[in-house]
Image 1: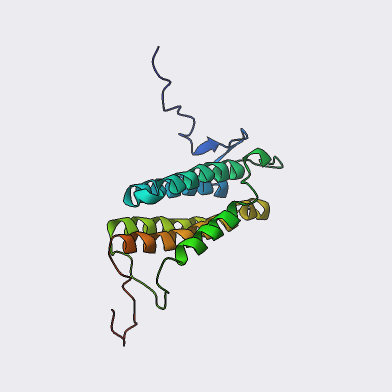
Image 2 (image 1 turned 180 degrees about the horizontal axis):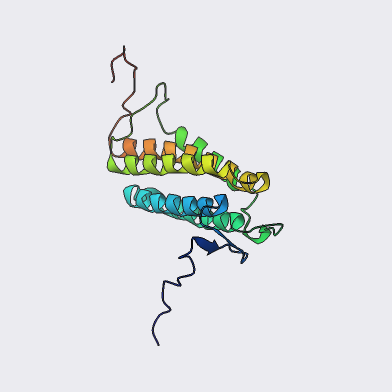
Length: 184
């Protein structure tokens, strides 16, 4: 007997199933959020390839995205407490940000992404995380608040990780100086 088929035809009419079993439109904001988490996970996968030093941490972030995805994939009054992130998850990201920032030169200007491939992959994941955060704000408050703080801090962390990857590859920040200034 072979593997089960990947296609079910269940979504051909524009509906899909939530984790809790309810059928909803594929345009539902919760389904959109699940897709956003999936896209961010792929971006983190590329970031893992671009900054191997941080592969274990980036993979852990992907795992947490599955948890957040499950949390928003319930409808109605069902609560997905079993998928909730550890209460210290946001604080752990903040500590990592602080630890990495101590190793980086102070940032005084906006910077251009693109100094190294690894840094650029992390910046790409960062902007995907920012979009995820904006779209999460469209969810009901209890679902949004279960996810937004983590994604907000994750995007901050991805920024400092991008700078770290660039610096470790020997590239300096390229500062934006505005229309009248010179870029370094």
